[in-house]
Length: 181
Image (cartoon, rainbow, N blue to C red; front, side, top):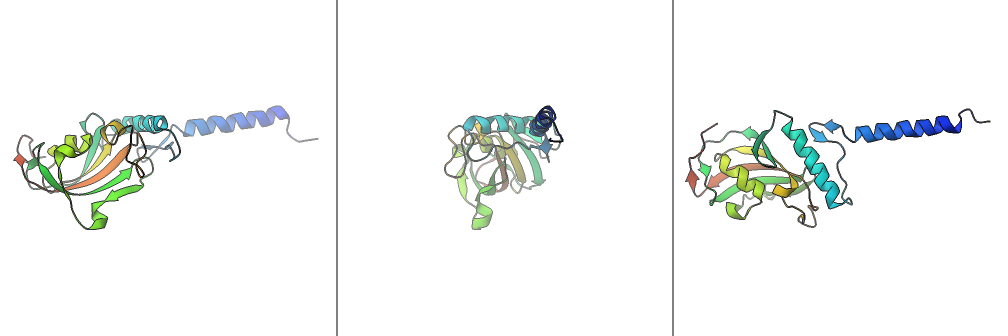
């Protein structure tokens, strides 16, 4: 005879499943722990991104730059704010928010590119005009403000939330509409 009955084993399995389901809602370091995996659907990535934004909104460490865009200032700058139509020179690092996987880094290449701000993702068009030359910010971005439902294959899946570290080095067009922080 077995020491445990079928019903007690079934209760143990049910309890394990409940603990696993509840742990999926937990957070670690302000991030949801139930991150989607590479093979998961765009819908699962979007759901995780929504949960990620809700977690950031509840944490006073992060400031809201705009819809689906939060930031944390790492280093204060000295210059002016770029105009929305500026060409900007930045060092940056892009990571998938769900697992911190590095997908691009100008720091690693050792060369800071210059971009027209008007051609950047929505999150950058929202946050970078708020920065001063010399600022370094971490941006936490909802999928719809990053690469959206298409992603950027092969490294960024559809509906992936992103984090960026952005060091604004230079702008070719200053605006002083924002007060220095």
